[in-house]
Amino acid sequence: MPTIDTDGLVADLMAMLAIPSPSLHAQPMVDWLAPRLEAAGLEVATTARGDLHAQRKGDAPRRAITAHLDTLGAMVVRRRDDGRLAVRPIGHWNARFAGRWGSRAAACSAGPGMTAWQCMP
Image (cartoon, rainbow, N blue to C red; front, side, top):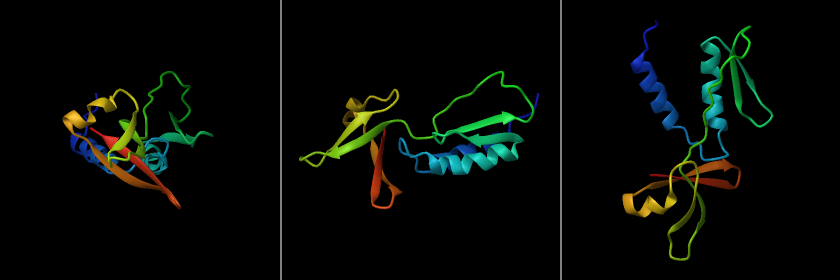
């Protein structure tokens, strides 16, 4: 069985965590991941929805691994009159607990004139 390069794995995970990828804005993550999958010997294609499809060359699909390329947590939907952020939960994180345990919000450019927010516990 091959040895796992844990230092490389941690470096890649840290690099992915540093890429802004609020929900519905995963293109920067796609741009980072696609060449790495190709370097690993996989055939990579982008679907009409912008998702990645990677497969071993010449191999018939037998199993699938799926994962989100965007950030799960909560989406900021608006700034309330009291200055707090109104959020909508995404995935398994419940936005009701943001105030109790603390969270962080970040603004990311989603294109010219657009800002996307992500909120993580």
